[in-house]
Amino acid sequence: MRIYLSADMEGVAGISSRELHLVPEGGQFAEARVLMTEEVNAAIGAAFDAGATYVLVNDSHGHMNNLLPSLLDPRAELSQGYPKPLYMMEGINEEFDGVFFIGYHAAIGTADGLLNHSYNSRGIYNVRVNGKTMSESMLNGRVAGHYGVPIAMIAGDAATIRQTQADAPGVRGAVVKWSYTRGATRALSPERARQVIAAAATDATRDLAAGKVKDMLMVETSPIVWEIDWVYTPMADLACLVPGVQRTGDRSIRFESPDYLTGFRAFQAIAIISYSV
Ligand SMILES: [Zn+2]
Image (tube, rainbow, N blue to C red; front, side):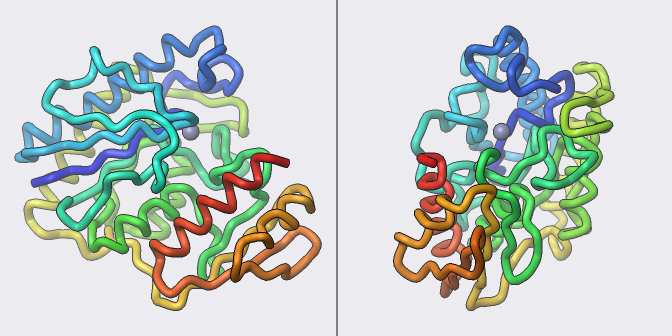
């Protein structure tokens, strides 16, 4: 039983502020790293107790050096650093049995989603795949789906769990906080949040062992249409430098991909280019 775990930071209990918690210069970044690492540990421990034999943890926030290696459950392996070509999903392949998302957040434009954004938080106003608005859990989940790997659980705020389960109802959800706005939240204590995550990870690992994966798989039918609306017009200008990208409006572009992984890689490239504006 091989588990792939992608860990973001915005959805961790006790984290509420980009300036204080999410960037290395933040006054509470050191504390945030501990909170993030211990939520990941809660999932790792429960997975091994329920029969997992291997867990790969991918540090998926910002420049991806947030988790504290010395504090991480020693049974897991850890991917860190930047760049990683598949970013939040680097290292996923068909040899995994299931995916856990920890610390995840809601899509850009979700009123009750703390720190809601979809990849480039300064640039992407909306991203759709085959006409459907995507959160990061949905975008990343389809990378796993490309390899036939189901999303077994997700932890984050209530809005994140709601969006993910609307897309794939079989995904186990661990709600660790409830957001009033993009900047304010009410959270479980870190200790209680870890208990909730461990319970979901136990159930999720048992689901995988029992083959209950039907409503956990996120897959798209090819060919796949990608559409991005940008905050600023030059981001659309730059995206159109990439072969195959078409302008569909002042701030909008589209492209098609023959399979999801190819499109996701193009999306990553375009999102990174847009940071230069
Ligand atoms: Zn993040």
